[in-house]
Length: 306
Image 1: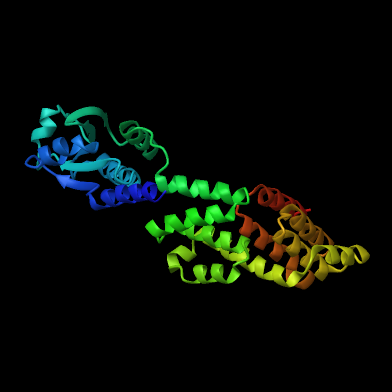
Image 2 (image 1 turned 60 degrees about the horizontal axis):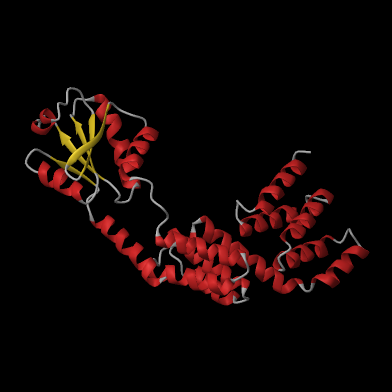
């Protein structure tokens, strides 16, 4: 796995080091386009300052090329200053865009295409690519965690972080593994030391919320006594919240959400809207795509507007 992730890192670094977008001309065309396309496909944008559609196309094609992260490069040529190769390619109107591979033009289009069509053009040029080794490792880690193997998931997340310390998804995943194994202090320390930009990531926010819920669960007690207490007095809202937190910590997320929806239906304003607040914590901890979150939010919305 180290070799797998290491290869991904080397590829990413090489892409970042290269110039993805550059201005060129007749004197450097052979080096920037013909020679360079032997290693990486090169897109050539023939343009001019007076051309309105060129100004529309330029930012869009640059955006798509940068999104490709090194799978393709863009060379921009002002035909007013460098007309030779435009003439050789029989360019009669601009913008004119040519794609080169192995020193030869292999595709082209004229005019200012919409961004979606530019993206299709680039995808056709570079071909469909599978997930990177890092993406594969993250997917394997998620699968292991979902199957209850937090130890394997933690090892995979840890390896990703060794190679990409700023990978927010890996940091959040490792924190969730620590939470699942009861190492709450380790999870808290990991999350606290993340850079500000990582702390804003949705996965990291979800991990922090999961930690908050786990801290709540430490104080909630066992499920059985709480359930018996609530059955004796269904109007005991505080016990219902404790029970929901305990159920959530034990893996019964549907049961936990169900109790909070029941509390919201009984008294949505109790304790400063505690039911809704707790539901939001559950949803954030699970993530937006979790089936329990999707269904829970639908049920909450129906209650809110009933």
